[in-house]
Image (cartoon, rainbow, N blue to C red; front, side, top):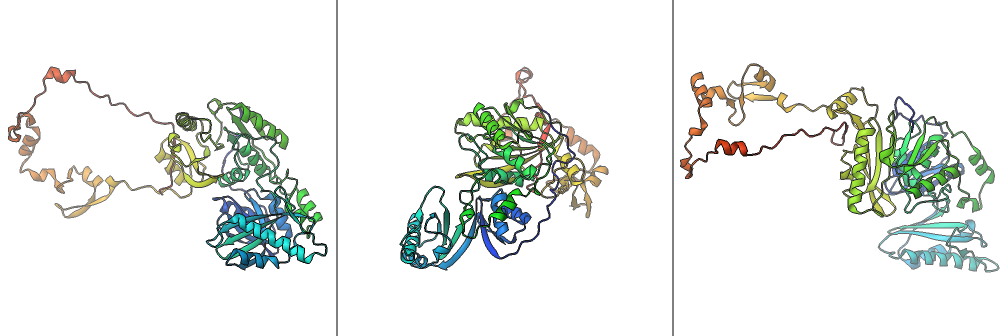
Length: 523
């Protein structure tokens, strides 16, 4: 395995100049917990305005072009909603009566199918399924009363023509059009997948958090279905996340603009060259087969190499790389095997990847301690319904203090740190007040003039004696002559032969790791 040489693997991505769009419509982009800021950054790059982050969502403003562009290019959005009606409601019947008179024919035809997605956070509405039933009834009754033939659209659970989102927060109700249809994590490039694959949204979010934009080689040594590797290649080349997707819900809207949509899909200004390489590997044969099939389907084989290889057998890189890891969570391994696996990961990182940066996502459990490395950052994320933690590790060669000193002075490691290193003051070099002399001084100055500081009494030992002879007599007298009978027991003398036979503990120095990790979380 070969690796490209780079000067600075974690440089700042050059921003693409995007014109600000006309802010005439408000939209809501849904995302996973912990990825709100990443999604907001993506929207800013696309030219959105009035960006506001919330809980698992980002609100923004833009025109119709931005709506199409967001669905096609955003990597960390689950779906894009267009709010069309807001009101306050106190009961389920109040909800039905209000929506029964809403102008549904502006957004759906009678020959189309629809689906209601309810999201309820309210004490007044405890059953979200019943909310969807009553909204469906309101749509059906509206068309039954206003259509000359009494025809009405029907409900379809799988791939409906129009999808409505009903969000209830206590009394506030927001009715929105779902412009995406199926969740945007369904990219369309996977022809196969392993059990419990990593979400494409989550993989892209982790890569963007890591600052990845194709500036160095990338390693995915436990590739699974190849999600990390393929998403990394798409980001590095500027390929849209929805390139392989064939259908969006907004294509069924009454105001759909097919010419604008064609221009967005055929725009190649976003694509950029990728001068490095991505290495995917896995010890499992099924993972190797699945990843190979997915990479071949996307046509990214020239950017991604797939190997059937264990992490321990990987060749150390010649230059710093970015590594992303999604280790097994325990479905096929017991606790002992899991700890051995995570311990192996820590050992490999210590001895092979000096100068690189590693991002690992795993369940919030005690598995991370088996890695044996100090993280430089931690963040809680959700992988499906499983609470996970994302940790980053900056690996370096040599001593930790040397690394921090060089990093603070701008020399040595090129990785950016979240906070600048501040050298801590040596407590033995601090100032103290000498009560005997009535003056302040440092321990260094006192040591240079030959004084020894008595910690308990705050005065020098030489002041405790009248002369040097008494001082020498005190320190040189035989301590074995001290009378121990005062304590009611004789002094126990160990025989020389017994003492010689007593084994002594060997003071072996602890093995020093060649690679240590800088933890700047406490700075």
